[in-house]
Length: 394
Ligand SMILES: *Cc1c(COP(=O)(O)O)cnc(C)c1O
Image (cartoon, rainbow, N blue to C red; front, side):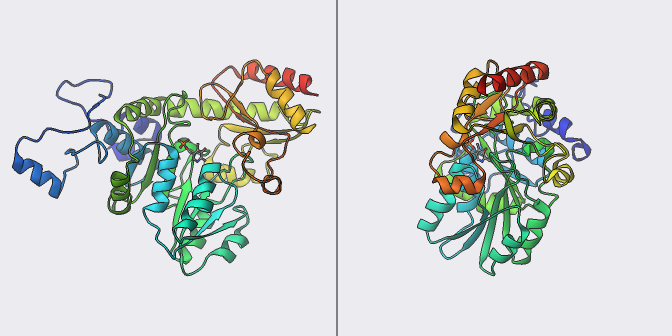
């Protein structure tokens, strides 16, 4: 029956394991180890642990297993491995399967730490990486080779909100036998259908919308059971990137409200984009869920809604962007996203500061660009605040 549930029902009930006490709220099993009834039982468990048998929290834990099962059900994946952070998930997905001599093709518009793994770490171990404009299918076609083992991209890029066609890139990648890894943070599990669209592995930073209230770090890798258990799990459990039981509990409680929160944030994002488009202080309003976005049709086909982030490009460069940030009274200046609190970020001087100016320019990270992660405040209050701050900035 659970298979026929919609995502919203799975997000509330999926993967629940109850102890002998029948607790309503998921229990936090804050334990590293597990007591074996006998030496024989310990030996048997090390040969093969059953689905409800645990050895050590770095390998697995009942609270973490609830989160993994719930995430797998929501995403429509066979299995999942929960990680200490989103970056542990990205690193685990890539490093668990790659070896020296392999080739990887990745979209160039990436979260800074993802770019660090692809450009600095993987080449150090003999993996060759080619970066392409992820929205240009001809560039993917040209870069893919017989020895390409994996492709990696963010389905909606940060912070310029380009939408990458998951199904089309997966088709091309599968043509050369490559594994498709999608960093799906901006799509969120609510709007994602990435596994059905051809992704082999989906990774999330649970730190963002899954927690949704800015409390804990976490991540998850989703995919086919054999891959998760035979390739990802050995790498993760022996290198120490597993999720803590307490954080898994925070994420489980976050999943219960995920759909309500993310839908409300996406509706606010569309209303804000619509209200600010054409404002004299703005050169550009970028929101994939608005008809003005170049890939609006792809966004609607792939995700339904446009996600929870809007990017604004102020006329007047860095000075205007800073005046805008400093004049806001509701939105907070920070660098997380997916929080209940609206967050504004100036990527050129913070998250993407490290990039040389010509790369920032190539990625569209201009001095006037501001990323806005919509929170759960009243939409009218937010629009009024953005308007007064734009007046102050110009
Ligand atoms: C935040 C983020 C990550 C990293 O997640 P952490 O939980 O901070 O480690 C990776 N990819 C994308 C797209 C992100 O937004």
